[in-house]
Amino acid sequence: MGRNEILVRVLACGVCHTELDEIEGRTPPKRFPMILGHQIVGSVVQCGETVTRFRLGDRVGIGWINGSCGNCRFCTEGRENLCEQFLATGRDVEGGYAEYAKVQEEYAFSVPQEFSDSEAAPLFCAGAIGYRSLRLTQMKDGDTLGLIGFGASAHMVIQLARHLFPSSRILVFARSEGERRFAKELGAFWAGDIDEEPPIRPDVAIDTTPVWRPVLYGLSFLQRGGRLIINAIRKEASDKDQMASIDYERHLWLEKEIKTVANVTRMDIEEFLEIARRVPIKPEVKEFALEEANEALFELKERKIRGAKVLRL
Ligand SMILES: [Zn+2]
Ligand SMILES: [Zn+2]
Image 1 (cartoon, rainbow, N blue to C red):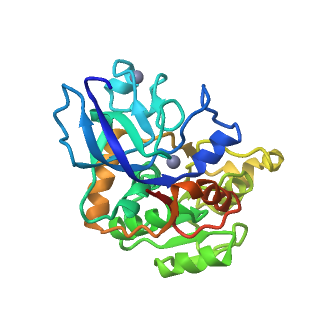
Image 2 (image 1 turned 120 degrees about the horizontal axis):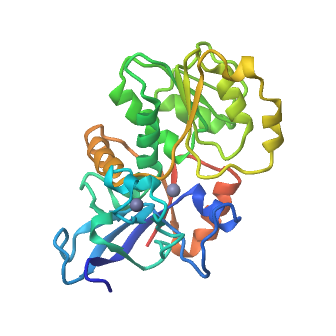
């Protein structure tokens, strides 16, 4: 146990699509075996000698970023999400599909008491990266927001966006009828299929799908001067050939922009937890036992999704 580390007894760990990217080799761990899981809520059971931020019994959360070099240009600018030596929880360091997890104290966060263990877990990736994506759109109140894909992250972003941008209309593009119904329940102005023409053009859009086709549709529907944020650590290769049909005039011209989002900073998590508590965001959670982790991952792969999946210990 390192001097600045805390040992946490895991209470809940969110299941993220990134785990499928690790298992299927799109962003593989450098060594095996590796314990997956980077949306951890737990209780502090041991503190290293120099730990000052936490005490035994505190409820803390751990996200995707588990450490960074601290010295590079990105780290010193508070952009440790872009650090070349950044370490990911559950990929480079053992994660939360386990009874215990360890982290340096500066990469752990107090969990607001408003959230149960299971509700809090998905805040640490799905929620925080959703917050970062929304921030990167640079949208203002009144702008129309498109959400392409409606999984764990988007179901929190819609709640966040309605709070931060009360006059904005939100369009949801989702494949399944269930996801579209859920989006309407959460206040979507309109919900349609991925390739369905929306009644108005989104000024900004966030794509959370693992494939390519929605990127093209997103760009073709985007308002002139609009910006598309791709919130995905990797895209699957299955329909990559679709991108060969990209058309400059239809998809890119008129100052349309594409930006990707990578990881989250500690500040993203801190800020998001505070806003999530205030809104308050209500994560919809389906619980699984630790032994059912494979089942949860299969459901995610088959896109059986309503809100977030969480392993409850
Ligand atoms: Zn994640
Ligand atoms: Zn760095």
